[in-house]
Length: 392
Image (tube, rainbow, N blue to C red):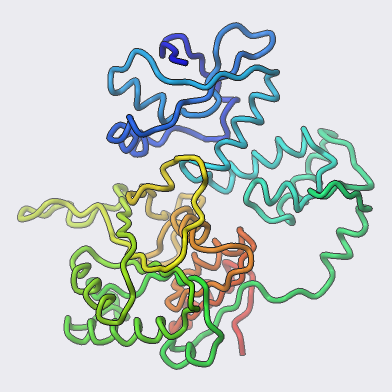
């Protein structure tokens, strides 16, 4: 049905999001006709239609001067509406931050206390250990009862003590960090399903990035050839590069036999380069070249995750996603690439690990990942960030 924007009511308690991303709203304005309807609830004891999913679409409609918007109707209690909102935002739209996912887990623990930590963690995109910490906090605050048994997704019950025993069992090491040169190490390792990497661009003043153009492209060709040999028959590969060298790098991809499937534009307006330039427009984006030969794991429902333009802030010292490396990429962006390019059984590689952001994404999503970094100082940063030790 169509609803007048003025008839739709808003309540911040009905969304896990900490605020509206204005850049995302701008993106939605440009493709508004392609967007799905928003979701609204008629909540028991409250008059009117309350928005539960589609806040960015709602804001885009307002900015475009729309009087009405397509909407899906639902009915239920406030708690049901809130859970619907949290579930919808976990499945699609702008990626939720770590804090927002924890809030979603808290809601599920309150409404579904008997569900296992693993079940809730899978639904919210966080580890079962994180869920366990949240559960224990809620139990200590008497917000939920302390249970002696949980229910798995398959409906089977098991004692609480068993979860602790399972945690104590030796498991494969999900994240490995090597202090080594990727050209030397990669030929010795097993092949990978997904590579996500941010190699040196050859455009900064950092010592590890100081190469003349010819030497840089020669290195890139060597790197790409070794990476190609490390890929499984069915794979995905995401490579960050500077707009300045995108065309030349893409040519190398074709020469080596890595077909380009997507050109993803990462917009980083909070870190504009050349802001005092007079001879050119200010740089606010970087390119991610995507090669692959199998379907990506997109959500079934249409969302901005499908778009080849992604808007994420550059990590800063005062952000939750703290800056630990001069050219660090946003965790939310890397998580998106890991999520759509892999599954739980995938082996993932980042041969230029930097601050270990690919490892952090894999750690949060329970993926197996190999990180390679030639700089010892950056390896120490990764060890501290991910609480792991380098391979000997």
